[in-house]
Amino acid sequence: MSDDIAVTGIGLVTPGGTGTEATWETVCAGRATARVDPVLTEAGAPVRLACRVAPPAEEGVRGRLWRFDPATRFLLTAAREALASAGLEPGRWDPGRVAVVVGTAAGGVATLEAQHRKLLASGPRALSPMTLPAFLPNMAAGQLALELGATGPALQTSTACASGATAIITAALLLRAGVCDVAVAGGTDAMVTPLCASAFAKLGALSRREDGPGGASRPFDRDRDGFVLGEGCGVLVLERTAHATARTARPLAFLAGFGATGDAHHATAPHPEGAGLRAATALALAGAGRRPGEVDHINAHGTSTALNDAVEATAIRELYETGLQGPSVTSAKGVLGHTMGAAGAIEAALTVLTVVRGTVPPTAGFTAPDAATAGIDLVHGAARPQRVRLALSHSLGFGGHNTVLAFTAV
Image 1: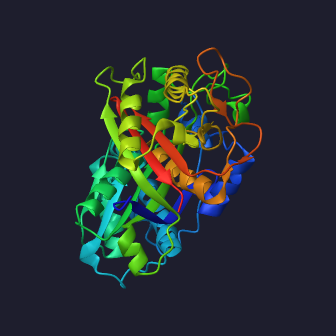
Image 2: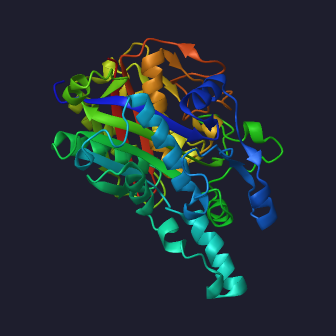
């Protein structure tokens, strides 16, 4: 379509590795990254499993790490990679035509928890002067804009675990409105903290398979018992196709359509019939000018929780019931855990890589479906070669948020 948005760069910082290639290799190999976490263990968290990001080199911000929450550090590293892969260099653009849009579920919650512990233990004099700049939810976008010298819109979105995908949709709308020429968009979160782990455990959302961490996250599996808490960041560089062409940049793929809806059903549970997901899918396909039967692949939200996987599998099964082979389906959360507000952006990046490289990563942890998750073409065991011309990325969040991104091949 003439108003397609080009994806020209990708950057990733995940438990699978720092950098796009490291993450892609880990996800395609199906190597689970869940471990019993020493920080959660020391804090006495009721569930200690986590998927952590290994300390990256953090080139360009070394010596200033104390200023930033881990979520912001992930973002600065991923954005640097994304811009390099897009062939863009800060300082060699019109800064007023560059937008920054970042999704997060919790902002700098690791900083907030750490500083609160200091306040309780030692009083207000112990607090860091960077407490507010590090934890306020808008500051990841603000800090990235500062690093890039970008003076266009700098926005932060928060739709729980759909936040990264919402940021990508927001960036696309800014581009289509002509507000900017380049948008650096993604999601970041660092919620592997004692408070967050304990709160999710209280909801019964976390896997308790501490005796077998590598098989704890089991999207769509009959024995799934919850997700593994993860962290990380995904960043896409988006441009209008005409702008990318004018600077001779080769798009990786196109963001051809998108949909966002609300369930208005329950604070934490998805609509039992997946009404919001179905509606978001219809919007994304309509925007792309495509029909359900043209969808080749779906990167599912696939959390490894009982409700999400049942509802999502049912929606997929019924939406694409054409009498032919349905789209291939995968979930990265068996490898990376649930990276919360970063998940939508990380999985969007993986969806683009699937389109570009003709490879669908396997769903780690899956062995067999139950009655609710059967009947979808779930890729598991090993990566599958597949030509993918149209792929969807699903992201859902507490509060009934549903987002669907439609990517097409160049």
